[in-house]
Length: 358
Image 1 (cartoon, rainbow, N blue to C red):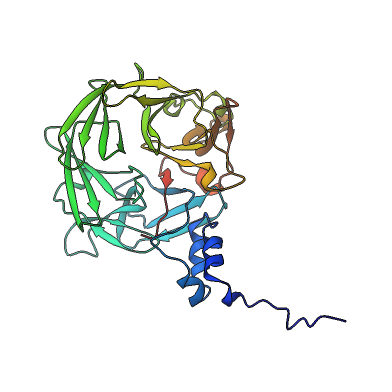
Image 2 (image 1 turned 60 degrees about the vertical axis):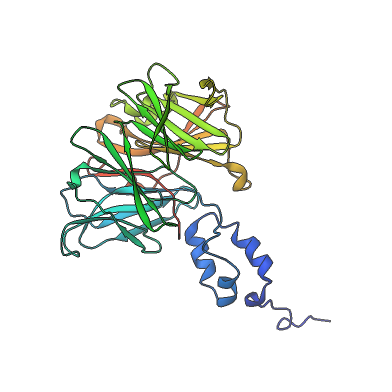
C-alpha cells in the first residue's frame, strides 16, 4: 500500500513549545535566532528575548578616522562565515562596547551628542556627558547583562568610568586611575595601572578603592584582565604590538595565562599550563571568555582567539588577521576571514563584538 504523502506531511507551525525551545537554544548565531522567531506566532511565543541562546561573538569592522563621516560598520561571524552590514546616517562611529556601538552625532540631534546604539534592536541610550568627544573611549567589560560603558579623560589625567544600568534606568560614574586594561569580577573593577605596575581593585557600588595587587609579571603592558565564572585571568600577549609581524608568522605568537589565587587574603598569580573548557577572545583593547561546552560539538576549548594586524607578503600593505592559539598543542592557525577584512587597515579598525537583542 502506498502511503498518502499528503497525510504524512508535518505541520511545522504546530510543533510543541518545549521542542521549539530546545531547537532555539542550538542557534548560536543571533541572526538565525531572529529568523527562527520570525517564522510564525507559535515559534515566536515559544522563545523569549530575555533568554536567548548563548551567542558566539562576531567581529566588528568600523572606520578608524573620527573626522571622516562614514556611516557603515560590518559584522562577520567566524562561526557561520556570514557578513552583516549596517548603516547609521549622519553619525560618526567610535567603536563597540558590550553589544552596543558608540556614535557621535551632530546632525540628527539639535546639538552634539554621544550615544550607544544596539544595531539589532535599534535601541539607543544617550550619554549624559558634556565633554570633548575626543576624550571619550568606549570599552567592553563583557558582563553577562552587557551594559555599555565608556571611559573619558579628565583634566588631571584620571579616568571617569561611565556605565549604563538598565535595571535602574540611569548612568553611574566611577573614578579610575589611568589604565591599560579593566575587568569586572565579583562586583569589583580590577584596573591595571601601567605607571605603578599594580592592579587597583575598586568596589562597584561605592567606588572605593579596596586594595592593590601586583601585576602577574614584570612586563604586563600588553596584557589583559579577563573575568571568568571560576575567577580572574590575566593573558599576556607579546606579538600583537609587533609592527613587523607577517601574516605567515602567526605561529610565533606567544601567550602566557595566569589565574588570580587567594584573593583577598593573600592574592598572587599562578601561571597556567591550560584553561580547560574555556575559549578566550582578545583584541587590541579588551578580552573575555566563553565555555566551549555551551556550544556543543565542533567548538574547541583551551584556545585563545585573537585579532591582530599583519603585513602582507612583499610589503603589499597589511590586513586584519584572526588567529586561534591552541594552548595544549602550542600551535597557532589562521582563521578564515572575508576578503574585505584585509583591506585598508589604516582606515578601519576591528574588534570582537557580542550581539544581543536586550
